[in-house]
Image (cartoon, rainbow, N blue to C red; front, side, top):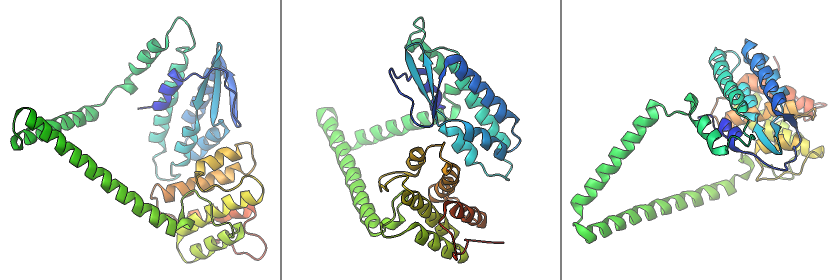
Length: 322
């Protein structure tokens, strides 16, 4: 389900102010902007061509309609295009999915959610009635399976518990025992995870490296890992080097609780270093979270990025050169 389209239809914020990297448009201008993006993506023969269109689109569009402001998050387009491999032949299918999603957003915009003649409930019902919001056969089948399993469990409990109030009480007690057991299991797992994390903070995903480690030192670790063929570690260290380098340049103060995407938002798309950090972040997220295998190409591209950011200078070696 395209949840962003639902947000466009029902999320209105009065007296909102545009954030950094955003654009304020009236409804006709917003529709024209969507038409231009749809045309550009539809004509793109490769993901690389579409990436320029995605990069030029602000992270959020602030659309004014009457005395209301509708916030449209467009970061998904950059993420979908950026995560599409360049040479595996999947771009036509991804392009069609993007086209359908943008077309839905364009259709929702024509409903004019701020019109007083159309209450929000009517607009919401009109959006949910569209085909893309209808439940598929797979969803209905899963619901049927869940219902059958629930009935089977109830029948099983009724066989092992007496009837009447006593049986209902026994069933309730059994449910409480199962719930408490699941809660204790989760608590045990959480404590174990936290202990492991404290022992390996330097491997944390978005996180800040120890304060004494400089960007140049992180970059050197990435160099050594790549030259040893450990491309996954090279990607991780290259990301740490990039974020640390921007801190050294005064872009921010490192915060362990901050995610990679939050660093991108802090930097802003108007910063000349944004494109470099975005590609470093994309590769890091794909390898770290998406379980994608890191490659020699990743090491080569990250080598260039580290050089552009100033992490590799002077006698330092690039990660990989061929």
